[in-house]
Length: 111
Length: 113
Image (cartoon, rainbow over all chains, first blue to last red; front, top):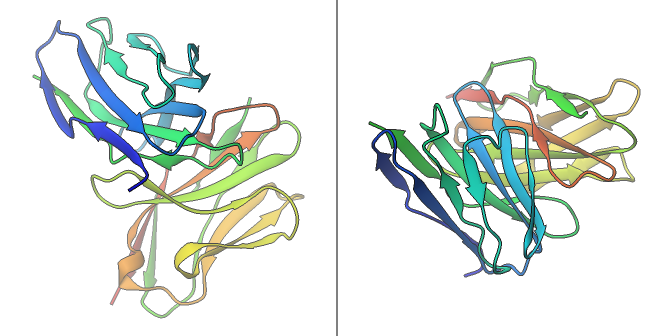
């Protein structure tokens, strides 16, 4: 089936550790996005990429890093510099028509 | 800058009654407007979008939305609510030349049997 796959679904991290969240899509979309969701705050944009080997910072990029080496893949690394990383992370991709298609999300908890 | 406001944290409606979830936006140029629905611990599902054309847009699961340029609004509506419509609803906007959506804070819809 076509779609967006995020893994892992649940992740626990100790303070000071980096973690990487995986996002893979087989929709042949050029654009991919990472959003963070916190209760009562909606979704906030972390990074986005419009094409392979290029990406742009979103509104809350500090403490995060991404890569886009392949069209299908857009992994997000949550670094130890992120002060409050506990959140629900959503990956999405988009065709030229603009609507986003979302994965099922990854819930990160810092212990 | 682009922004979205969803003024109601929660909307309660009885099953079978019409529902409205409100959304207003601010963007430079012509807006691209979207509604999404989220069930607990799941990703967001696309409901409908307005890019251009008819101000009344029909989408999935019987939902529709009305674009009002003068009021900068894009309210989500459904003529007859179902208990299964209970979920978190997000409005989103993108301005011309922008590549990422800005989301509102979400409105929780509760449909009572």
